[in-house]
Image 1 (cartoon, rainbow, N blue to C red):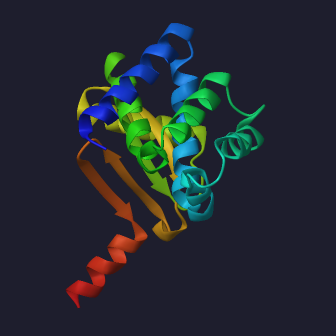
Image 2 (image 1 turned 180 degrees about the horizontal axis):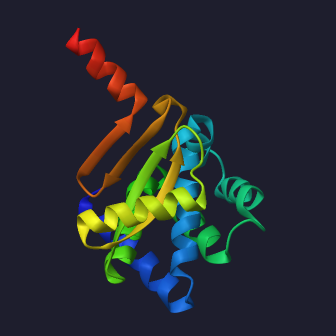
Amino acid sequence: MSESSITAYASAIASVARAEGIARVVEDELFRVARALGANDELRATLADASIPLERRTSIIEDLLGGKATTTTVSVVTLLVANGRVGQLAAIVDEFVSQSAGARGEAVAEVRSAVPLSDDQKARLAAALKAQTQLDVTIRNVIDPTVIGGIVTQIGDTLLDGSVRSRLTQLREAF
């Protein structure tokens, strides 16, 4: 899928979420859905499999998200599955989150850590990143056991790797 298609889907989602007044909620829910699909190859393959009837695939979405997500989020995921865009869902969601944050004058930081960050840790990290970027920063925490300890933060094209894994690699290379 082209960049323009990803941008078009993201813009349409942003317009709907803003019109409904739930942009931040939809951002958070879609971010989690995209990361869950990225971590589950079997689920992603099932939702992308055109040989499985669409009704069955939408039923799976309803079973997974029904009652746990807004109807907007469920509708967006269903639309992307129906249009054969499961493979691009993460890119579309990332673009949507970026567009929404940009419209609010914010930046989004994807923070990978081995364990969930507390609200206090997120607030301190957001304050530190704001001091560097001069923008309000929304923290999206992704649990990644491969980080081992510390955090890996990505804001746009900037990667800040403060993980134990990278420090061990640096030590290994130094010896």
